[in-house]
Length: 84
Picture 1 (cartoon, rainbow, N blue to C red):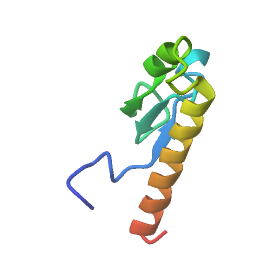
Picture 2 (cartoon, rainbow, N blue to C red):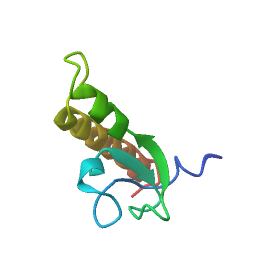
Picture 3 (cartoon, rainbow, N blue to C red):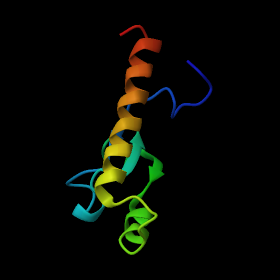
């Protein structure tokens, strides 16, 4: 294991019941999907607000797809790294 405890943990997307619908799949958490336990790694919810009025910013659906892609890549790497 590395010295970074958050890199060595599974990552999750934000979701109910811990987050409002406006934040679902926009935040990446390490260690637990529970917002009271997991460590926030990335929060794109502010970008979602900005993107609504700016054609040069990704929209909410693009942000959600990107967050899922990051989580999937990380967890696949972690599984391979740990020999799962």
